[in-house]
Length: 209
Image 1 (cartoon, one colour):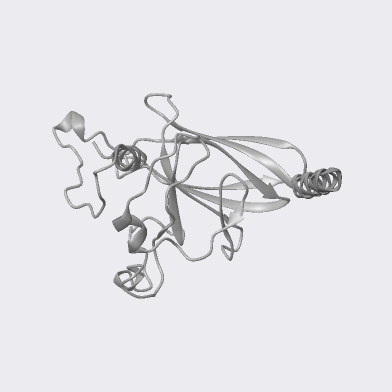
Image 2 (cartoon, rainbow, N blue to C red):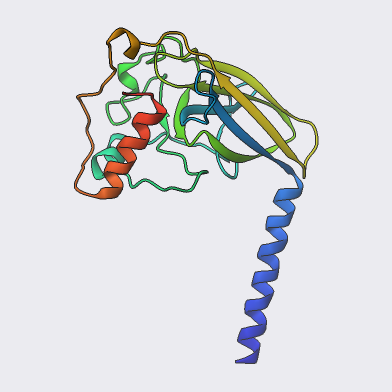
């Protein structure tokens, strides 16, 4: 019993050391996204990549994104997580593939004309991500009524905290003109409260009225 307890403590100690080593090589970047007209933090679609866009990473630990989510993920249903650092499924927005990931529909062009990043995922608009020292590119999109953002995040030193704020400028206010955006074609179950929360949160990130 004593030896088992000792081994458990040893494993816990090693795990903590590895976590500390990782943190010593990265900076914590706190990101907040605001709407210019309301001055409020808003959910938005985001992509964070290294400067050459050869690595796409996601919050909160800066994990490198491998293959984007395929259709089955959406068909089975996604349960929304209220943690501010939770991100939704990784959506492919350009490239060539097959009908499983739908990239075949995009060819070599982005699926959204003004979106140049290779993928996107929804965020709460107030989240953190661990990034190594270097230059990182961030792309932010919030529906069709706001001008998309392409900017840089520069991490000069590891083991520090960096605060970044981005402001989405409104291009047009369509509801004031009597037009409301909507989505009438959704391949996603709604028989679970968490599924419905996910769809509503995704709609907010895309500014669907």
